[in-house]
Length: 332
Ligand SMILES: C[S@@+](CC[C@H](N)C(=O)[O-])C[C@H]1O[C@@H](n2cnc3c(N)ncnc32)[C@H](O)[C@@H]1O
Figure 1: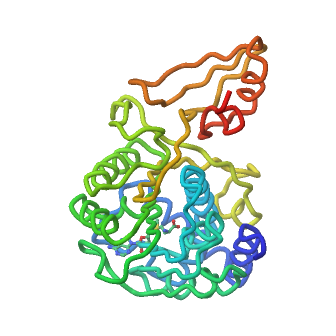
Figure 2 (figure 1 turned 135 degrees about the vertical axis):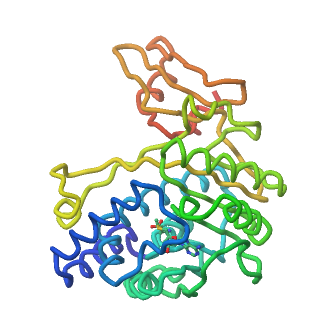
């Protein structure tokens, strides 16, 4: 299997190359406006062929990168998990389809449920460029969620990436509950905003009430120690912007940081790290300060000094979102 990251980005470039750039730019402006003001669940945001190409060019690289990072974190806590079947709900142009195959190359079949016909057309076209069998052979079904996902065969993995935001609260709960019943493992990704975090925390409660264990990001199964309204659990993924992305986003920076919140919950055995690094570690001369979520109540500020030798060297390498201690340190 080739490098899915570069295959996806090449596929996006090729579809964007065939489009009129001023039309894409107008569509990007409108999509940005709609996503900034809350999406009205009655609206279909990705309504035209231009909209979906615009979304693929300006947003999909970021949602793919966030989903892949969330899935890799989940995979690290479930080392024995090798899913074969996957259901992605609200798939858009397939960000989570590509991301899941990158994190779990064992995947053999993926079904995507999506309401927008233009999104399905483009998602299928892009997927055919993949060397991953679950991506190139993915099956796309037009479906508008108004409650639980439709009945169907059990799947090993179900995902929803940047979709809860577009559903009314009761539908969010019904969809998540039905995914917990239909899939062994469920991973949900949302924007890394206070509201995105609150949707994730509500979904986490539904998943655990259905008997799932939290695999990531939480290093424990207790209630989240963060108080909504005061702070929010989220992570950040840096990605390079392509030329078309830079032009369409009217920005000059060569990269962007995508902030996301997520939860992975499963019926599989989990091997969680003792802690999770929240926020960029503060690295000073001879001292690293880590904000850690652990089994203990509250968020801990852990100071690691140069005198701690090996642990200190590990702390200098630690990044926001990493498990702590790193696996090679855990036995010491
Ligand atoms: C922000 S996009 C995310 C797309 C993709 N999952 C990603 O991560 O890039 C939200 C997607 O959810 C779909 N969606 C929103 N409400 C839906 C509903 N009620 N039923 C089915 N799909 C829905 C939209 O059409 C859109 O493709």
